[in-house]
Amino acid sequence: MQEALEKKEHKKSKGDLIRRLIAVPIGAFIVAVGLEIFLIPNHVIDGGITGISIMLSVTLGLPIGIFLILLNIPFFLLGYKQIGKTFALTSLLGIALMSLFTQLLVPVRPLTTDPILATVFGGLLVGIGVGLVVRNGGSTDGTEILAILVNKGTPFSVGELVMFINVFILSAAGFVFSWDRAMYSLMAYFIAYKTIDITIEGLEQSKAIWIISEHHEEIGDALNSRLGRGVTYLNGEGAYSGDQKRVIFTVITRLEEAKLKSIVNDIDPGAFLAVGDIHDVKGGNFKKRDIH
Image (cartoon, rainbow, N blue to C red):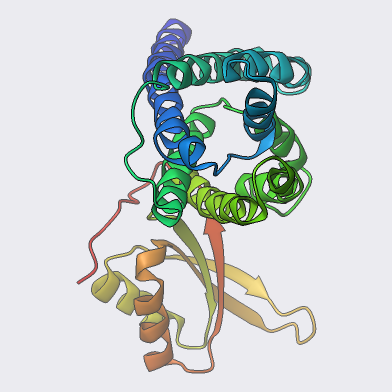
């Protein structure tokens, strides 16, 4: 039995490694495309260490890859000590590949010279690429490593923390380029950080639902038949009244949230309803379903 479990764990670890080796290079390449094909040629910079590297590269006339590696070394060491070897090595792979891909894409002509189009599409690509790397246990920028560490003790998402840090860094673009480009850069990163969250959490982020109602059986049956979701009845007790309560618990996708609220309101408009975000759901019979 123990040997079978060890083999299963080894197979899972090997699968995770293969997934990282595929996803991280893809994410790094997407970031590089966003930078070199859209943002940098239009003087719309990225944030964090990458943004600082871009400004130093323009000012000193040296390849951006040099600054990407040198400036990120302290954050690698921090990530290695605080988060672990796997994260640090995955991050090193992501940043090294991003630096390489960025350099290889320098001769490629930008797809647009319109700063608004460059801002929107560059921000989307950077967000998708960064989110893909972070989702697979790595990072493409030292500020993301810092954000991931700080994220453990705050209610803010990784994308929000990265945005807060970059508000100050991107503002410096006004002195290197121009203030309108600094504002475009802020817009690009706002788009990027929202895209990071969507990429990490998924478009069909799950929701945990708690419902307290005197009509719990009717609501439970309706959720099962009309929404196609299984429910669990939990025993609860009112702290003030001491009354026994039946609590309905279920998990849905956020696309189903509006329909669930409508079902509950039709049966019991006075029902207590609480909704919480869930970033991952495994096991049981939970599956993504289409809305009908």
